[in-house]
Length: 352
Image (tube, rainbow, N blue to C red; front, side, top):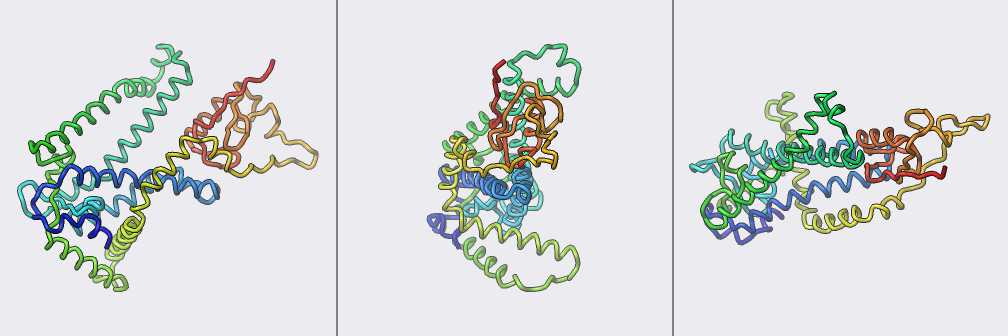
C-alpha cells in the first residue's frame, strides 16, 4: 500500500522517536494541497454542466468537510492518526503514554476538520468585506454604519480579524521553533490542546496496520454483525472512508501537478473565461419582443439598468448592485448558470 511505502525510513526507528520537522510539515502540506485540487475538479464539472453539477462547486467546502470528517474519523479510529500522518509513517500518542483514547480522537477530529473549515469561512468573509470596502471607495459614513448592528459587527470583524490571524500564525511559528530546538513535543498548538504528540511508526505498528487493511478488504462483502440500521450506517461510513482513502493514496502523487494547474488558471482568469462555451441567445417571443432581456433592462431586477456592469463569464449586462449581490451569494451567472466570481465583473462606461 502507498501509505506504508511513502516513508520507509520510519519503519526501522523506535515508535516513540520524535519525527523531524520535515516529516511534520510534509504531512501538513499534503492535506493543504487536497482541498484546492478537489475544488478545481468540482469547478471543471460545474463548467461542463452547470445545471447538473453547479451545486458541487457552490457547496464544495461543505462537501469536502463531510468527506474529510469521514476519512479522518476512520483513520483516527483504525490507525490512531490522520490520513496524512499515517501516509508519512506517523501516529498520534497521548502525552502520558498509552493508546489514543476517545476524548483524544474527538478533539483531534474537531481540530483536523471543523477548525480548518471555520477558518476557511472566516478568511472568505474577510476577503468579501475587504472587496466591498474597496468597491465603495471607503466612502461609508458613520451614520450608515450605526443604522445596523450587523454592519457594526462586520466592521469590527474586518478590523480585528487581521490581528487574530497574525496571533494565530505567530503561535504556529513559535511552536515550530520550539519543536525544532527540542524545547517542546508539539509542533502545533492544536496538538497541545488535543493532548497528543506525533511519533514515528514502529515495525510492529506497520505490520498491525497492514493486517487491519487486509481484514477490511476481506470484510468488504460481508454482512453487518447486528443487521440493524446503525450497523449499516457505520459500515457505509467506513466504506466511504476507505474509498476516499484509496483514491487519495492513488492520486496523492499528482497533487503537486494539480496545484500548479489550478494556480496557473487562477492567474490567467481571462484564459479560463474564454474557454467557456458561448451562452445561448435570449428567448424571443413570437411577436419579436424580449422584455426581460431588453438592451436597457437588468435581467435580475427587471428595471432600467443603472451603473452598467458586465459578467465576463456570460457576457450579459446587469445593474452593478444586482449582479454583485447575486454572484456573491450564488457564485454563478443568473442567466446561464456558469460558475462566476466577483472578479468576473467588468464595469462599463457608456458614452453619453
